[in-house]
Length: 175
Image (cartoon, rainbow, N blue to C red; front, top):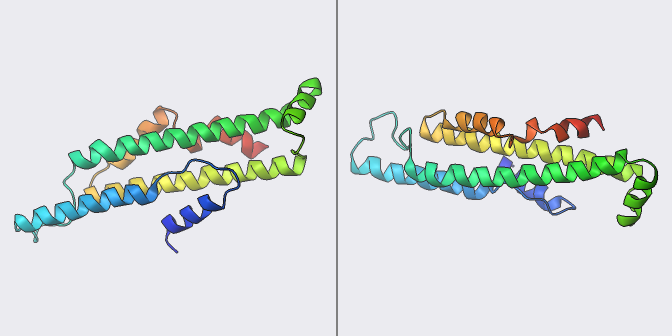
């Protein structure tokens, strides 16, 4: 089974409704870009060139829609992950009266085993989303013969929207 299908299956199987990266939609954008460049290369009779079937290094269509869309989706995924991880860790680390207050407001259904499972699920969610983002950026670089995907990933790390760089992921893994 291809990763996109595994990813979709995983996201459908999640108990909580968590945001996901639109892999299928992003892959369609790249496929459309590739088919458009195929059409352009046939019109220019450039089938013998090594770049046939691929976009030139800087594709204004892809760059104008692909990266902003991926950036928005990454921000939503990382924001949701950070929020859920923070809430889970606050519940686990709370002491005294605050702990009892939090347990009653959450209807007391959070046993220690359930908290541990939620933590494991969030770590898995973070890892699978990181893999999805890496794969789509790698596909972008492959189609465009560029390193813009790697540059985008580096920029995402600088902007602190790379999920594997989240301090909450480190805390959850220690939990």
